[in-house]
Image (cartoon, rainbow, N blue to C red; front, side):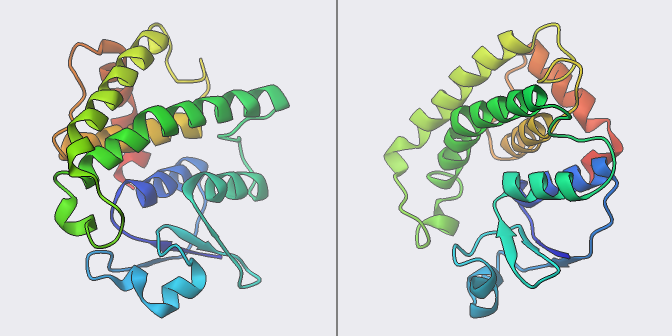
Length: 203
């Protein structure tokens, strides 16, 4: 197998995941800023032109961070970061969906439609007038999540999961693109600091 990697929070989620799971995976880094991901060789791997992308041993490919992580979690030995039981897996996927839809999507589109507009305007439909509203939506949902995280070490109680990694990577990205964690969200601040202190955060 081989992971096609690049800059940005999406590839970082997978890198942190494989670091936490102790998976040794060859990687090839594509020049995202130079548009290498939109050239025919990569479009043959992933017609959406996005990264990361996992090449399997049979030459087929998987894209999208959650399917890639779930696949690697299932085929490699070691403690699962999705869940060991049907209930644990369902709980992890519930939180992944909540974080992805309610926080990641508005945060990322808020960036794409404002600070990232020059980079994305010719690649995806951008709605600059929606940028500030989307950023506000992300903050509203972070306020809700902060309350739900109070008293918990991880998103799924005492289990480190892919949900924690997803949340950390995108909040870290938000800190870099003028969408910082509100210091009033003390549970989120503590969670972010805890995740940042893990060796995998350097991946």
